[in-house]
Image (cartoon, rainbow, N blue to C red; front, side, top):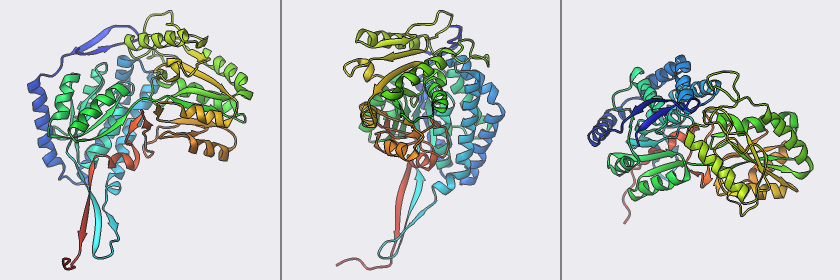
Length: 460
């Protein structure tokens, strides 16, 4: 299927782009490979000038970029603006800090001198999703271009205009041809890219199904990969939580980006003694959201990214109910034009229900009552995913103790603030492996070489 830009609010097809031909794909890979032979020898200062310029341009044009995201995947306009500004901040962050992150590290051998030094691997293939059409690109482009790698990117088929705009950003910033290349390719062509010996690493953000396929292909080719996959994050509410602070985080954590976030709060695990109070206030807050045009700043409930995404979510809810779940609110398509889902709360979800294991990628809450902290931790850990999670309590020591016992890549106490360029992002279990952002993000695709010097004589 071709790349299609369809407005999920109106259902109107905006633009269609055909897949690249085999000849075009091979030319793109050759250009990227040739670029790397030069780019890897540039100084951090030279790279930083281009990456910082891209950050400046992105920030200066944030409204134009944001409108593209809203048009193509229905993101609320103010959330889209925030995403673009954060993406610019990520680029600026790596332009400033990359050199210090990758500087040689002195070691202390028993004799002589030794150090570890970092060098780029080469051309990287990045497969990225639609839910954050610029942030997902910035968090691979910033660190990897600063590390001296070059990247070729397959973006999601429903956000082609965002993908093309981001490629143009690098051209406008002065990046050499081939440093950043957008590929309008099919899934089958992706295998050709992974198999190509010029590709030295693979990064994917997407579904578990896609991750398994791409990771397996990369593994067959003995190529380093990172996988940022799905999540079913627990939102744990203890009996001493401040409800005035917890409820707004609950709404934001589930509804930000229309609930289409891998690290969104999805399973709400509340101690029995306060469960009634929490669910009443949570339901009231969710009921106050206003569906409408995502371009309108007063809209607080936008459409899902596509009609297919909506139909998939409705089907998941129907299956959950068929297996015994109870709908506390919502559960259906909103009676209005566009790909809108009612804000939905499911409860009475038993372990044998598919909903107990599934990830709901949209405005669907899974609500659980538990008797105590031990039960909350056990339920939080009874998941195939391990991306993030949160715990809300007035007792910070209590929160820290629970955070340490939940098996995820990230835990947040009294917040869900994962958007920080200098904090590593990633998970475990079916949520994938590897880290992005922070100093760890730039370390994923570099060769860490030991260099040892000694004037000793050979043994024997």
